[in-house]
Length: 197
Ligand SMILES: [Fe+2]
Ligand SMILES: [Fe+2]
Image: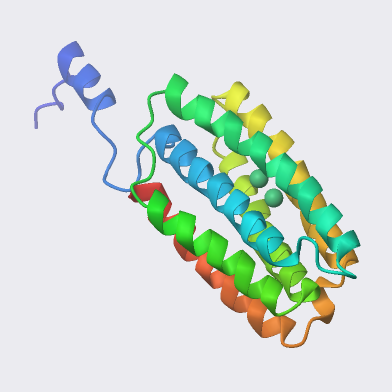
């Protein structure tokens, strides 16, 4: 029986460069990460705008409004950074911007209409999902220290927002558990859509 033929150099190289099977791409899709993060930070800005439209100037809501304004300022900083990254790295922004513009504002306004604790339930739920989302991106960004550093930095802010919302009674709003689960499901869907579309 003949010994197996040695592979030629071309065959070995070609094999080495063979594209990964669909869904198993070797490098994470950084463009899609930037697209979804950009969309998410935009959504966060819109949620806080909706909350402030309802709660600003309402007697008795001064403490909550001050907290929301502080968090909103940080979301503006996050959004500005992802705006810059979309431009620098020539990432196609999500086509769903008009959807997130309306959905974010509506989510913020409706939860604020239910009361400032319900607004905080919304923030705590959203930030819990964003924390998980950023954590899972960090697992795939060893090759991109600049983006990794940005996401680590923003993730700390999101965790602080979640804790602040809990300190403001996020878990005490009537129906907060159900509301939180519904909002988290919505956020996870929004993430999946914005990664692709
Ligand atoms: Fe953010
Ligand atoms: Fe946040």
